[in-house]
Image (cartoon, rainbow, N blue to C red; front, side, top):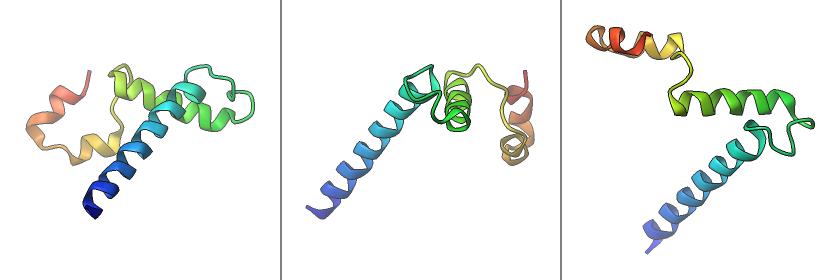
Length: 72
């Protein structure tokens, strides 16, 4: 029963994070108040959509076979 509540908590946290990306990162109402956070969330949204280049740290972690598919 406790595992159920822990899982539910994490699902709610993920939902709030997604709403934050939409509200702040994608030209939301709070963009003027927190421009640095808005830019970071917008960059995260571009990565989730596959529009941004993968970060170098991620490329360094990938096996040699996958590096070619990660770079565009």
